[in-house]
Length: 399
Figure 1 (tube, rainbow, N blue to C red):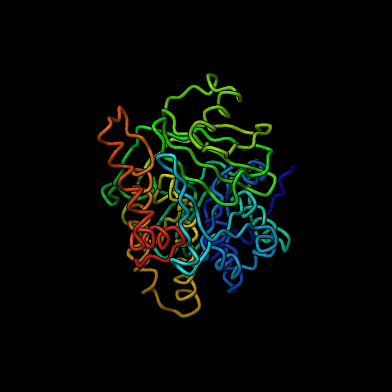
Figure 2: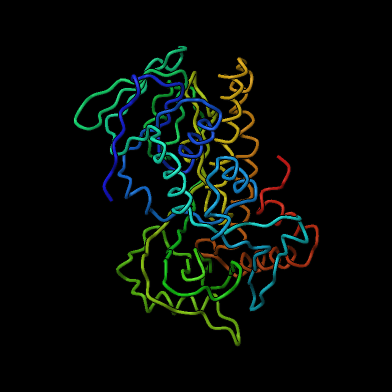
C-alpha cells in the first residue's frame, strides 16, 4: 500500500501526537470530534502499521470509546461478542460467565482492524497524519509552547503546539525527553514467553480457552470466524526454527486437548515469539508532554489488557484536553497521571495474577504446580473468586 503524505498546516497545531498506533489515532479522532486540532507523526509506513498483529480483545469500555470516536461501525458488525472464557486445568474445563458474574461482555476484534478503522477515519477527511517520519525530537516541554522537530519527505520540519501526546510505544522517543531523575520505573521480567501463531482455520471453541498443564500454558483464541490465534508458553530465547508447524499443532493438542475434544488445524499464516514483561513509568506527564499506552506501561498479555489500557489512557487525556482547550481549565491535565495510574496498577496486578496462576514457573516443582491448581480450582468454584476474575477481565473492577 502506498503511503499518502500530508502537509502540516501552518506548522502549528494544538496537539502534536507522536505515534499512529491505536492510542495516538484514537486520541486524534476524539479531539477532532471536539474541534481540537492535532497532527499525528508515525515513523513506520501505513502498510506496516495496518498489518502488525497485536491484541484482539476489547472491553465494553473500549468499544464505547470507539463508538464515541465514530469508528465502531465495522466493529459492531464483525466483532465477536463473548460472554465468558474457559479455564482449563487438571483435565477439566470450566467456564467463567461474564454476563452472570459481571453483567458485561467482551468483543473479539483484532487490533489491526481497530487501527485500519481509525486510519480511515483520519485520512478520508484529510486529517494530518504523516507516516515514515524520522529524527523526531521534542523541545521546550516545560513551557507553554513546546515544539516538535522531525524529518519527512526529504525535508526538515518544526511543529509548534500547546501539548505533546507521547503515544509512540515502549521503544519510542518521547519518554527519553523527560528530564533525568523525573521518571521512576517499576518492572518485572518473566522467565517465559509466548509462541503465537495465526492460522487459517475456524476456532475450535466458541470462547477463549486458558489452559494450565504440566507442559506449560496454552491459549486458544481467535480473530474471526475463519482465523484462529493460538499460543504456547515457551522460553524467551526460543528458536522458532525448532518449531515447525507440525510440532506446534502437536504441542497445542497436548496442552489444550481433552477426551473427546480435538483442536482444529489449518495453514499457519504467521508465527512469532512474544516476551513477557510488566513495566510502569511514573509519572505519565512532564510539563506539556503526556505519555499514553505502551510509552508509559506494559502488561503481560495474559489478561488481555494492553490495548484496553492504552484506550483508557487516551480517553482520560482527551477529556482533559477538552477541559483545557475549550473549558479553559488545566486541573484535569494536572491530574492526568494520577488518574491513569490507578487503573494502570489495577491492570498490572490482574495481568500478573493471571500470568502467575497459569504459567509454569521456571524449574517448577510439584508443590508449585499443586498450588496453581488449587488457585484455579478456587477461582472456578467460588462465586466470589470467579466474580473477581470476571470484573477485572471485562474492565469493571473498581480502581
